[in-house]
Amino acid sequence: MKKYLFIIVLMMLCVKASAQIYDGKLPSTTWRVFMPIQTSYESPDGKHSVTAAPQIMYRQNIADWLAVEGVVNYNINNEVFSPKIWLGITVGEFAFIQRNNYNCKTELYDTGLSGTWKHKLVGIDFTWDNIFANKEWLDKDRLQFVATFATPNNKWNFNAGYSCRYKDGFVANVRYNIQNGIRLQGKLDCGTKNIQCSCIWDFNN
Image (cartoon, rainbow, N blue to C red; front, top):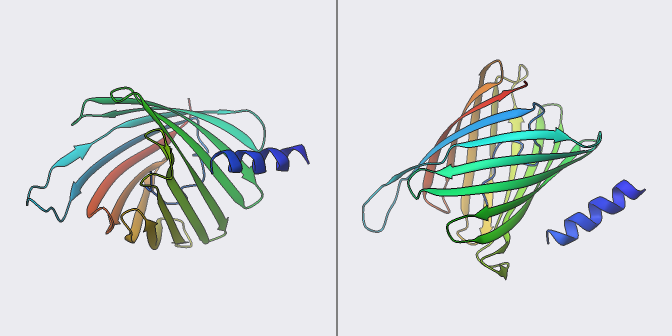
């Protein structure tokens, strides 16, 4: 009972969208290296800059249903270092991540919440970014909902859905699992007019 009360309180306290495949689940491995490269496909001034922001994550299990993940993120273009603490909660087929992010350049904090329901080859994700950001509640927050499908061998994962509130629009992801925890992922975000290609590597010590 205490576990469920803790989850409800955490979600109330947590009340940026960047939904991935099964975005509400922390990786099951101890380490994750995430390398996204992003560019705009439509720009008012016609300029299309490329942004790279590598990310290293370390997971520590606290209980069967609770894990903490420390994240180090560095935006190469803006030279911004962002440490993060993410809390992962699993209850049956449901998983949640509460994200706490700090920008060392602006000295601003933001928080968001993601959730995933996964059953065999299908799943549903939501991601609510910028619930609290720039010292304001619900200032330019984004809320995404996507449905996910995996092929029977789990080699391919697809999802598609919609981002509402700030910069609304269609969103979609496709992920190809190569081997040994190495994956390639592509993302289309019609709300921000961006496309993103990522390499993901999940591994243990």
